[in-house]
Amino acid sequence: MSEGTKYNVEIQNVVATSSLETRIDLLAILKVFRNAEYRPKRFPGLVFKMKSPKT
Image (cartoon, rainbow, N blue to C red; front, side, top):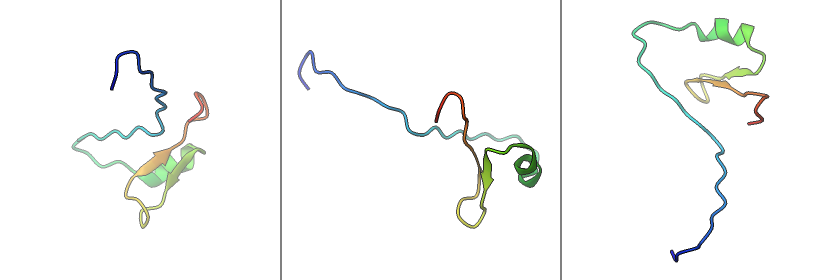
């Protein structure tokens, strides 16, 4: 890397984890949020795609 080198960085994905010490009803969340996906055989978490800002 030389001084003055510029890079174009674009964030594609953000993943967050937490220990809430309680159960979360992912199916109930799925019913409320249209942009949510839950496919437990493919991925064990709920995926929420925001419309704004575009993700």
